[in-house]
Length: 222
Length: 218
Image (tube, rainbow over all chains, first blue to last red; front, top):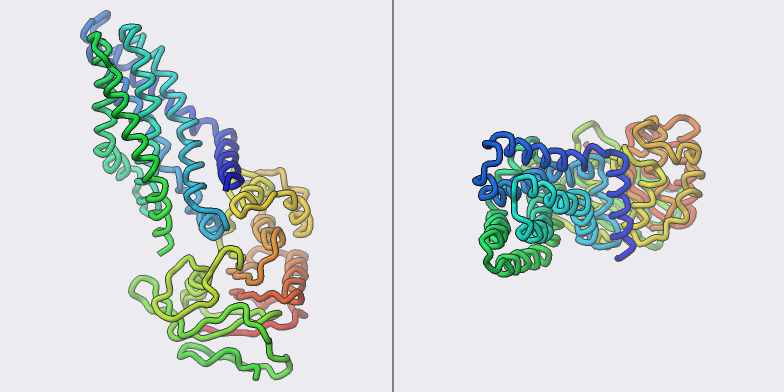
């Protein structure tokens, strides 16, 4: 079981090394969105810091969505998925490995990148750790929900448009708690409660969605 | 007694008298009906594949060869009928008409991933690629390989681990004369070791392999 997890993870990382633009694109997108918000506001506007939690969170969610649509697509098209289902190891393990790779290449760098970008928007130094911690808990949830949705839509011709419409409403709780933690920290309140909520959402997602995703992928053969 | 396959409504089968009856069946299909969407493709098909036997499925385009093979592999649910033993990974090799090779990865990387999927150590990969005659291109991304080289790399999976039943969908696609010969040797080895196979192909299978039964879907 661990052998198939490692094999699938290694494959994803090799693919990422072969196509660097794939995982650099969300990061560049995130930087651009945040910078454009900064440029669009008045110089040194203190209001910008008020909006910073929402801007940072929405930007990160949209950026992480960019690569999700293709998570299972090439495997579906080149027949790899058939071999995954006809292998001796559980499909869920391969799904988990793909999610892990997506988060390592997208969610984790986005969360780390958020700290310097939030500083640029004028977020107070005390609130930045809560933004990063929230994103570290929230981006895996997005990977899980988005991965499940991309498994559902893998056989459809225009999944790229459908995916955000399916995923973004489902990640609203993550956005509310994540941005809420940053706002609480900005106003000097205790910001740990929303983070605990995020952690609970993550625990729920990680214990349900890999299995649901494997079942959704099973459907693509019918 | 060689009548291990019964006439379904859609089948023509020419019995061969020169083979001893297979004692053990590797695959037994009874009254199988395969639908694709609302279309019925195969109706009431019964067949058995014995040890050392290969069935060459032929038929015109769209008649349901691939769907039948997918049902035998367990990728698709049969509309009616039974497949015994139940399709299981430990038991069968499936090479679809898609090669299951990621174009950005090399043949070796693709096969190492397949080994991981099947709990194999992956040490045999270079050797099986050599047996299929593609060891020289094993470090090149599959994108740069010819169709035949990709097909050979996909077929190399058959040699990594022994499984009694091979389900091959158009395995000869893109193979050159030497590739055909190589495949014939591999198939012959499998059949003489007591394996079974169901193979779809529009071209005739390489001559000189014993135990091949034609089965025409119409």
